[in-house]
Length: 389
Image (cartoon, rainbow, N blue to C red):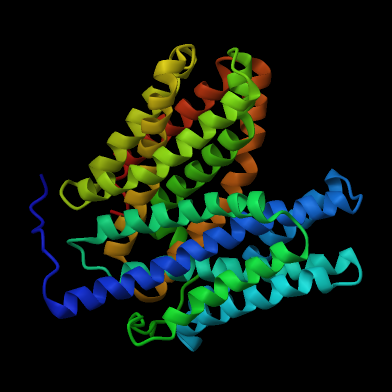
């Protein structure tokens, strides 16, 4: 067990800090909610207007273009304008951009809007991570980052749920615009204490990659497996005899596990060696993936199994967020989180392609083998080079 002392938040000042962290995590969950809402909403509207998969996919790629444009500049922008001001600007920009989509006379104007929406999303994604890490003390950092990860995941899941109730069309865009405005209000209060200013000179993105290669690898793995799973688990389950509806329920169960189990994992992060915990979670996820074909053959066992597996797997990312937040500050912290977000985009691109190729080789073994190998390689790499040593 780590010799790190466990500080218990006490007193009015500690409560204010926790409330301030809660406000920032709320903004992070709003980012997840807006992203989870807009991605299927825009795709659905383009399809309703008669556009095919190529145009829909090209428009979705514009989000990644926005991320690529702003991510390398984030440390410098944060140094100049401050974390709080950039987060407020990104929330306001998200609201305005969502109002503009249904007002555009031609669909091709949605492409620059999607780029700008990607810029705003990247700012919110990276800087809410940075802000949360900066406000946390090391004694509670694991629990705080676990709540952060769970809140963002809950936001991702909540977007489609809103669409299921509100439907598509102008009303959905207006709902999406109101959500970031609601999150903006508490961030204007003194309760939302800004993080320390970034005064050090920003480095090159490659420097950040050298500082935190294991954390960046964990982000790539998380995105690759998450996107591959969302795309292929229903098909994989169908190959094992599951109905389409049951396969979708399996994904929902996995996502719920990924959210709920971050809280006990956060408790473990604050009490045990964080690097070894990341390696253990990756090893358990690797072994667990190899058991998919047998556990999914037993429906009474499958739901509980994927619930636990989803929590263990996403826990790797939570541990890495905590390690980076405890070891870096200033422009290094912003820069590393920005490079991690780029790794997320690359993983989301590679994951479904690799999973599809694996399943074409073996419909029942390909997907779990691909995921198991990815988790095992991460565990070996983390064992060989203890994260960020």
